[in-house]
Image 1 (cartoon, rainbow, N blue to C red):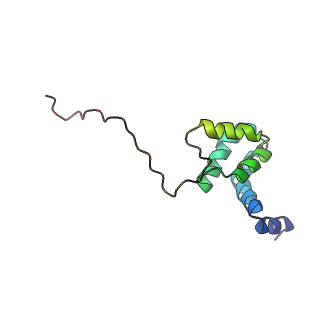
Image 2: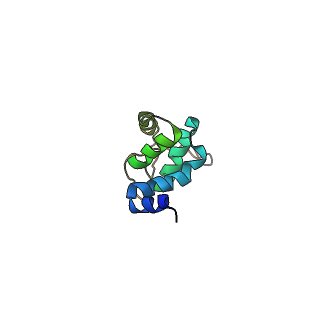
Image 3: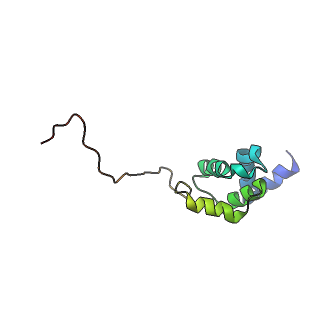
Amino acid sequence: MSLTRELEVISPAGETEFEVEELIGEWAGNQEKAVMAMLAVQDRYNWLPPEALDYVSRRLNVPRGQLYHIATFYKFFSLTPLGKHILQLCCAPAPPAKSSERP
């Protein structure tokens, strides 16, 4: 095991960075992949932890504020931990069924 990996295991923040690197490593330095990187992180953690966003910011050369702007603009990103199962409800009335008889 390399010295770098041993240090990452000791530090929880380092462990997060190691996991995030595995998710976004192929996009390093590519600012256009910010949303994709954030989606990958959210898929892994079920939210966007601050440590992970900081690491994404450094690896993609995107200002941290811009990542937070993206995270608050799009409804599908969460900056707080979510539950294991996410339930989304539609409150719009259902259209009448085509096979039903009308009065």
